[in-house]
Length: 139
Image (cartoon, rainbow, N blue to C red; front, side, top):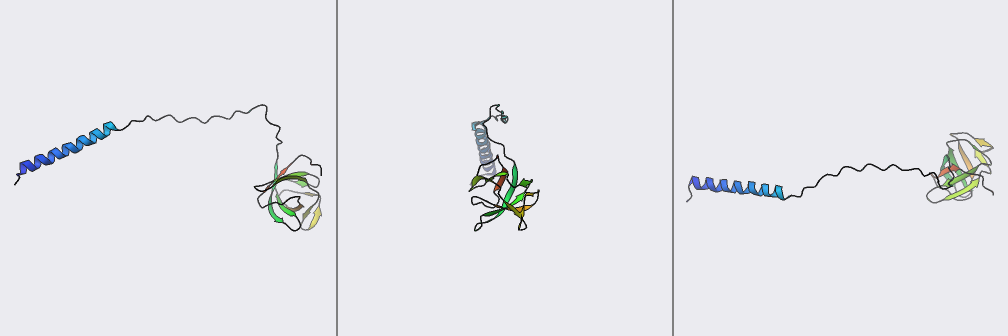
């Protein structure tokens, strides 16, 4: 059969072939340079903005009674009867004046921060709709 020398030479040649293939693979790989990361562009403030009124969040709708059209609002700031509010959510977006409000089933003229008040609303509202202060609305 084969002697030990022949088997060793064959084994050695196979090892050399494997190493040569590895070197060939390494040299044929495509080299890509890493690009430096782009710095985020700073937003430039345009001096001539559209005349969009800035609205301040007054509170959030926590519940709605559809038969009597009353929305319960958790207030973040104070609110008075006669103030204009803008209710905006995923399904609704309207503006109205506050005609009446109640706290614990009693009519009140003004409410403080943290109170949960009931307000008669013009349209349907949903939970987590935002309530904003708005400019006066004529009824």
